[in-house]
Amino acid sequence: DAGVTQSPTHLIKTRGQQVTLRCSPKSGHDTVSWYQQALGQGPQFIFQYYEEEERQRGNFPDRFSGHQFPNYSSELNVNALLLGDSALYLCASSAPTGTGIAGELFFGEGSRLTVL
Amino acid sequence: AQTVTQSQPEMSVQEAETVTLSCTYDTSESNYYLFWYKQPPSRQMILVIRQEAYKQQNATENRFSVNFQKAAKSFSLKISDSQLGDTAMYFCAFMKPPALGGSQGNLIFGKGTKLSVKP
Image (cartoon, rainbow over all chains, first blue to last red; front, side):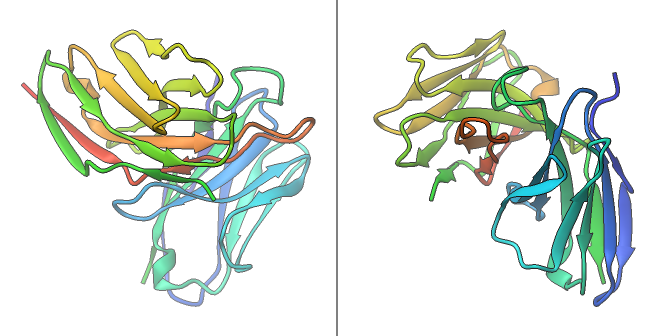
């Protein structure tokens, strides 16, 4: 059973560019969340997708947007990149509410974004 | 708003010894979940242990156990018989339970404690 997979693993962009990160959730999971982890910090919640809609959002600007597809996979898009967007972007998936262990998230290995 | 505080940026322990990592949190919620996640150099977050706030009994998972003090809003992690493979960043995290019929809650993380296990 493949866990949560993310692509690409590393990428380098320049200021002002746009980036798309991809995530495939663990089999059987229907909810995908994205987190930003700056160097030496704990992850910060960006947003969550469920039933192809953004359900919850953290304190991130509109430059951060996302999408969830019918197969539950998800994309994170960041426009007009800033130096401060350099971070590890983690995707996490969870089972349908009422199944699995309540509150348990499964994480991918992340996409390391460097903005020059 | 909920906050999670880990006051120990770095800790070290000798192999086979016991170490305790501290975590405090702030919330006005009465029911919630608390977690300890481990992040080794491979970057993948791995769930170590989970505690439901309405359960008074402290959670245990093999060598890992917690001391959950709800009134004090404290949630420490004890690692017994430390192994070299325990070397990692450890994050304490808080989650509100989902609303009825709603989606999963989101995690609020502390800044982490870097644990080094020395041979």
